[in-house]
Image 1: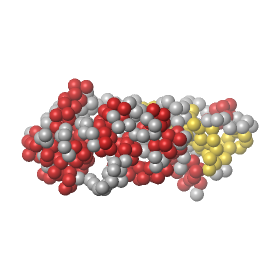
Image 2: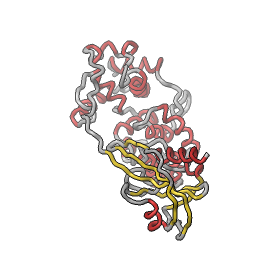
Image 3: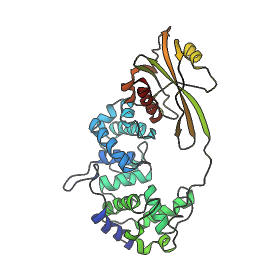
Image 4: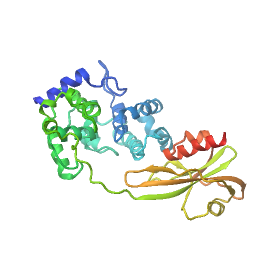
Length: 353
């Protein structure tokens, strides 16, 4: 049975929805669960326009689950570099290895097995199950939460447990047993293109006649924003240690921010860079004028980075620890590094010209 809401979404998607995304199954082709899985992980907290270029390069380098599983985490992170939320890449790599070890290299076909993979929650598992296996499951990603909150007048922050429970009940109730792929894609398309966060295009929405928020003139108030909390601010100094055209990078720990990525060595703001480098790395350096502060926002705090250029004068000890590497600056920019570090190194190349 298909309800009126789902029927309208399905009809609209077939005529106006997105049909040319690179991971979508083409007519007369079998679905590719691997491609759909990779795309759904990339689309977590990232817009389609930002994902498409990364997706193409990622699939070209890692065309199968086996290739991804056999790659090093460092290389996987390199192809993810700049996309953000790097735990997604680490989980994707770990999940590929789990699929090889536990499922014979074949993407699992049961919902609970999909849900057991690292980095996959209920909504992502549902999208993969629907698109890759044509086994319909209700989804509830950020766009869909917005559509449901407005259409069915659900107040309260959508990620609050009680509100999320209400939204899941709607998702389960409205999910159709037929044309589920078109319906699911339609919900995503509707939230991404019409029922947008600001300036929604209500006049052309296929379900505007039954939208409670539109009737109440409350689309700008829904979904209810997350309770505002002032983000704490932190500061750090990143050392840009230069030897001719090479820069010294340090591997970050696997846990914590930018886990497993290459980065610039960091010191506390009160520490003297040349002294730390001498004692810790055995390098004698001359300090240049610091670059302008680079600001970077995380989900839970803001980080102010002071890039401190240091020119190598003498290397008294070998800075060849397993977590250190000298790279040409151009090569370092293309390595698996955090976005603000890439900004700093790109700025460095401009200073050198």
